[in-house]
Length: 208
Length: 208
DNA sequence: TGACGAAGCTAATGCTGTTAGCTAACGTGG
DNA sequence: CCACGTTAGCTAACAGCATTAGCTTCGTCA
Image (cartoon, rainbow over the protein chains, first blue to last red):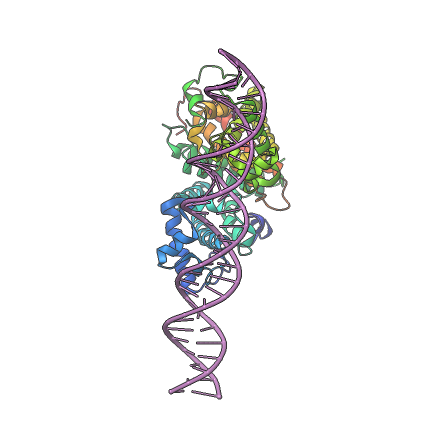
């Protein structure tokens, strides 16, 4: 259910390189989701209405219901695509030397978020009906954080940092003149040092 | 404009213990905002409608416009209250020994967030019209992060971590069986170590 | 008493997602 | 070759949303 659940459960098994069972969609449904994706990024979540999506395809809003269950289902489809993309990028990113994993992971996370800001916000908004996502998808997408951090709680903290920094960067809430990259680097440095400190004490199972 | 701007600008001046100029409100407007606050936490952002707020006070929705400019203004008022509360708590929290500041700050941040989950989400949601907030309020509320971290970019990274962890905890997105407190502690440990490492090299002005 | 402002009201507008029910086209089996 | 069922479009309609316009009612003060 939660992104790191799978990571901890399968701690000793290598992560799958491809996303798990994605929802099947008819060709027309695919077109609708793709059109919605374009509208989302171009006009923001506020611009994403059923009428607007229909118009982009030359049909009326009620006709969309022949292909998708409704607006929540449409959002679910968008986020599912986004998680698959994000997960793929993150899994690729941790395929480097251990000491470089955290930096590489954060770079990939940031690049994916910047590549689809509105989708990132939608995917991580509270109102979003997360329960409708395919089972295991979020867990799979979150696995690389465990692989990079090496310890579950440090992994969750690293994930928190990535998530928070991404949101604050997208919303332009950092100090006006500041270079955002340095904020990412400051966090990366702190977590990489913590990882090495933990790795140096292999007999200690808990952080506490 | 952004929360840490003030912190960096006034690096050498002690932070104000009280929030800056808050918006003045008529008694009736105060009642409306308070009613809205209750509805927000009880029924979520989706339940917060003008009709619903009016009903809580025994009046119709259009009558609210005699006291407040509209829904965005109502949300602004709610968030302004929240930022004042949060800022006060955070400033208090950093009034401890340097080595304990980060932990104390994160505790206060977490407690404030957990004390008003829906307000926290509203205040940090992208759609929220942040520009309408009183000038300097966000910067003032963010100052304690600089005071705790001692260096601007580490401060922004620490703020990112707090924000991300708060959102993930509120949305219950962490590993099911995991103790969330340990995730907070893992991050606190990493950032406190980084702070001490930086503080040990006083001649080095940049992180890089 | 008369004026005026404050604070309520109803009615209406235009937006939203969504449902019901109709129609035209297409493919397939008898 | 025709009839049937399915697919995918349509219009009309509904309820709920924020918001505006315009009316009324009440209290205060000169």
